[in-house]
Length: 180
Image 1 (tube, rainbow, N blue to C red):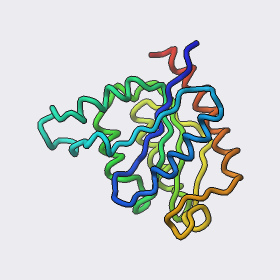
Image 2: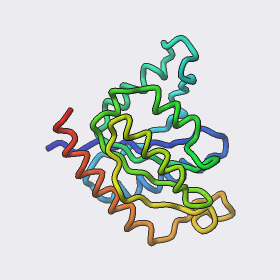
Image 3: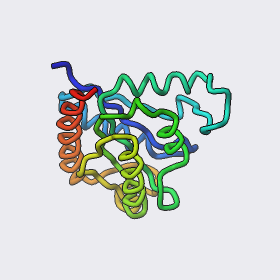
Image 4: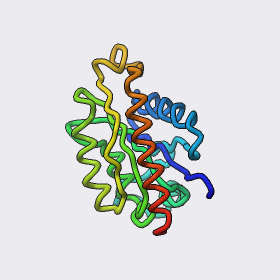
């Protein structure tokens, strides 16, 4: 069977964002496993207009569903802003529909409380999009996993949690592929 394609979705577009550091770490750890094809998918690259704005013909709006269709599952890098996910991530989720359906997702979150509130908020949205989010997910604290709140330096203990999450994403992603 062909290896699954898993997109590591960076959930922020803000200047100075930390999601690329976290996403690159996840990709590095995931690539060591050799069980799927992992790639960074940066929503900032698509320059998605806010839902209801624009002409609907913007290149990003056409490329976004195409990218999602090419993936069998996702790992969302989610930062907590005001107890929720970013507006950019919500917009990206809303800018496609069927392309999300019947796929698995893991969540990697960070923030002052590990991003737990944002992760829980994302779970409700994913359910509506028919994305099966897995139970295990690593949470990173801005106080202990980021040097000076800027440089990502995760504790070694997070590697086990990440691998458990990826095991679940691969298992569920393979099972759900039979539905598509």
